Amino acid sequence: MKIFDAAATRAALPFDRLISALERLFISGCEVPARHVHTLTAADGSQGTVLIMPAWLADRYLGIKTVSVYPGNAARGLPGLFSTYTLYDARTGQPLAQIDGDEITSRRTAAASALAASKLARRDARRLLVVGAGRVAALLPQAYREVLPIDDVVVWARRPAQAAARADAWRSEGLAARVAADLAASVAQADVVSCATLATAPLVHGAWLRPGSHLDLIGSFAPQMREADDACFAGAGVYVDTDEAARKSGDLLGPMSRGVLSAADIRGTLASLCRGNAPGRQSAEERTVFKSVGTALEDLAAAMLVYEGRA
Image (cartoon, one colour):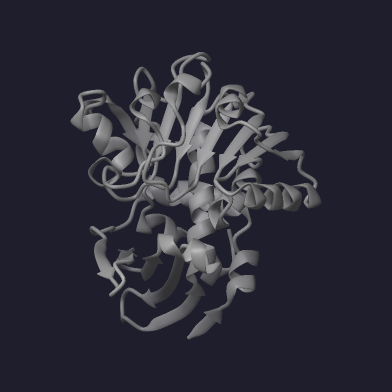
């Protein structure tokens, strides 16, 4: 069995190739059963969530990812998410590779957001606001720059020191990056707002969003999690990565329960966008929203790219 550590996994997943690999598999499809979700509660009342996410192409590969999400890790100085990934031969069940799950998860997540933006954001979008300063947030400008002419990046985080450190890191990579002094004002100036947090209450408000903007919501994968208020969805073109988003994400469940949004209002999935079966942006002034909860299809596409070592 081959072992791909973090560095090897990262090197095998440049965003241009990864975005293309995701699009190809969204078009062709694979088997993706419902994920298993389990909550672990410690004696002190703190909780973590474990997800088990399989996907396969019956004549080629089977991949299984396990993810642990612990929001309280920030206080421990640890990332809130850890994951592992094992790739098998789907015909025999033989293990083929152990691949760094954190790199797969963070890079495919950023790549999926960029892929969606390539279908939904205005083609002249150049101002990107990143809400969050964690592992996925750190990758968003690089991914977005593969599909849009992003040349102005702003970051906001609950802890200003983290936002400052992230902006410094981006500037060292040659990006024009700065810290958002005021979140509402920065949202109002952004062409693309991308949220990658573990928030449980809205951070972005629809009243702040400018006409023609694109809102990318990454963090809310459970009913109790929210990054956007109801007004973000009212009057917007709403899209999801998979149909599972409407059943799992608090960002969608809340507005749907209050009649702001219905399942029929969701225009399409990332697969239907990639296949050309869903309408994209309707006008330059329309606001678009993309809500993702992640899918094992993306993990499998990334794992195959790592294992095969080719585009």
